[in-house]
Image (cartoon, rainbow, N blue to C red; front, side):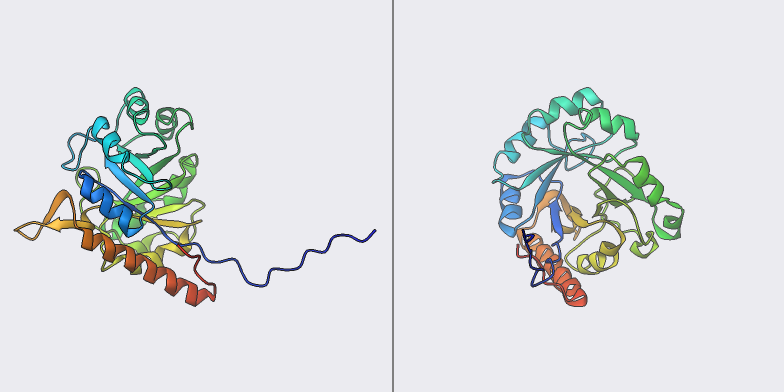
Length: 254
């Protein structure tokens, strides 16, 4: 009896595209704009001191507008497991994001011991001090997280519009990574080109970089700019195309 012969593939597997999350949404029109631009996830901040904060009830209202295959993400900072689980129950299909000083075990418990997938934020110091942050060890400690989100260590927790030095990250981390912190339509292409080779995969997360400019030229926190979101997504796709050209691998269609 002859064995079944499986022909070799005629082309290499396509390169994965960079996934995109827009965080800090507070308005219906901004949720709609993010979806229209083609993002993969939207984030709601459930941390009362944040100027972008919404209640769990409001997050549920906004998340209800999402079409299939766009993931809502609920951001918590040093919240109790009981409150995280209660808030999560209001938003079907939500992923969690822990952005405070939570230990690996606290993240695990608040996720319902893995019932909900979650991201763990790593707050990378600005400047040369970024070299002192052991991302490899951090990823190992938080290995049950779906990905490690890389953000700049600023006063408060996230959304400060500051970028850390991407070049100081270790060359190889055994984790999926999410690049955040100070990303804009102007710099996200470069950020992806520098960081994607360092992890198992790369996604990007933007908040202040796509917010509407106020009269003083500063971002209006929690108010997004549809044009900036569209330009951000386009800049991400430019990075994907460049990576595909450099590797001679076509980008998977979106």
